[in-house]
Length: 301
Ligand SMILES: [Fe+2]
Picture 1: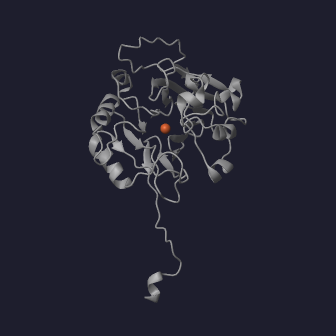
Picture 2: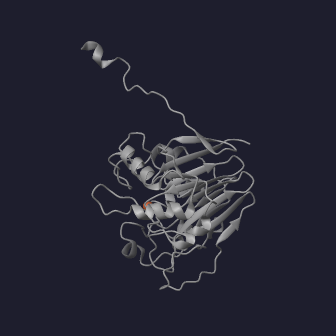
Picture 3: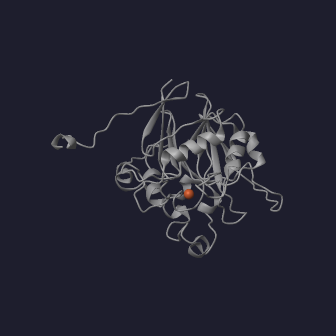
């Protein structure tokens, strides 16, 4: 079986290359990355209509070519709350939505969440579709966070390659765990995490949310994303969302300590492609020393 390749592209953008089928979640590219990327995905999944998750400039480049088949979106990408600029503030813009202004409508399909974050007061019933059979892939949806209104739900995606027996859960900007996520227990290999349950130094303690979602889902691996660093190599340029984390090691370690040993944290660096040994699904860590000088500055004393 061929090895798999995973990459976090910055913000919530993550891609999975399985050779026979490739897919991306919330692609959001800039500069040279945006210029150089070729359409290489079969499917793209969008969690919600905010600019940093549903990004027209990136989607215009990716949603074309022979390989590309479908862009799956939550309902707000097609029927956003109106008027957009007023309702969403800086999170979504009239120029961007509906996304069918930028991607051919026949290439776009709306999905609704199968597992809902219902606390009983909304009494919502969506007609679906909630899941997909894409041949080699099976897709199920969960409700994510940051919806504009209860009837414009946002989506997380559980994508499973049936034959390779490997699965990825992208949770979108989910903030609260909820009981229905128990249905995903032991079905998730790679949990792509964003905002949920993070506690800043001296901020209000949200760790119980992080512990709760990991206990509900019990993924094998946990990949923190949706932050940026001040590294020159970070694919999201300075001045763009999301904000910098001041201490990446402390950030990762705080997550690792909170979620315990059952699930392994994978501290990916944005922009780096990681190879998975298949069928074991084990990351092959690669790194090098990298000098920032050619003549040692200490030679001169
Ligand atoms: Fe976001």
